[in-house]
Amino acid sequence: MKDELKKVKKEILNHLKKVTDLNSLSNLETKYLGRKGEFTKTLRGIKDLRKEAKKEFGQLANSIKKELDNNFNEARAVLEGRNDNDTFIDVTLPGERIEKGSLNPITLIQNELEDLFTSLGFVVLDGPELESDYYCFEALNIPANHPARDMQDTFYIDKKNKEDEYDMVMRTHTSPVQVRAMQKYGAPLRAVIPGRCFRSEATDVRHEHTLYHFEGIMIDESISFSHMKGILTTIGKKLYGEDTELRMRPKFYPFVEPGSNGEFTCFLCKGKGCRLCKGSGWLEILGCGMIHPKVLEYGGIDSKKYSGFAFGLGLSRLAQLKFGIEDTRLFMSGDLRFLKQF
Image 1 (cartoon, one colour):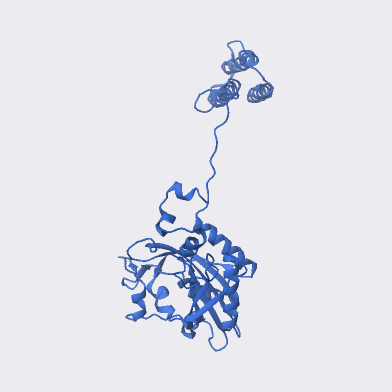
Image 2 (cartoon, rainbow, N blue to C red):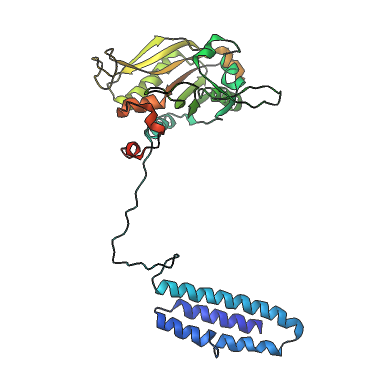
């Protein structure tokens, strides 16, 4: 009996696949599922079964009957031109336009830089946005009570660590990933670190509490300042054209020694002086320097054998300069009028 029931089911499904109109569908349903249909006749054989078998056969029959009803309903819906909401579709009407999204200008700049550095053999790394005080400051040669901490307005988190201390912060820069990468991969190492950072500061057209950084490090034997200058020159030419020049001026950063500012030729006036570069002909884009020996040691790297450089730049500022955006708050405003321009 079970085999006969399954045989009829298979036969119905094969016929159902060939149905092309509602009339044929109705005839097929009557032939098999009607009061005198083939499937119905098979079900009547349940009266000849033993009591133990009736229950099992009945459950199988109900399951198959329900499945067949669903198949017929689906076929009918398709033939009637209905969708899941039981509404009719007029295929002669023009379709609805599906709007495509666009990437945020910050993402466009980040992708451009990542493509550049992966082509140079750098890996792209990521790290936690909720960071410990140790990695955010201590391991970067910024001990507690050091004046350099005043350079960064920090969001501290009201949650204690395993030592029952309040030491969790929203990272103020992507530099903590430097030490994490050294500890994990050792040397030699070439990596770039894009990511979101947070500063507890007032917002205006040039400042935002949430910002995006792009950081790079290169560590190997005999790495010098000239290697860093070559990489930074490549960044400038990639972003602003082959005529772009690099100017470097000394600046203090606690995690590098020596440290420097990186300034590129103003892409708007080509170095002649304008409103964008405040008449100087140069745009301050990044900070850089040779990685401090103490930072290398915190990362578990022998500072007598290896040296390296690090640089960091603000993706928000790069995007502002490249696309002529006057207010940095627009990047994360969610304003589609702004985002649809890119």
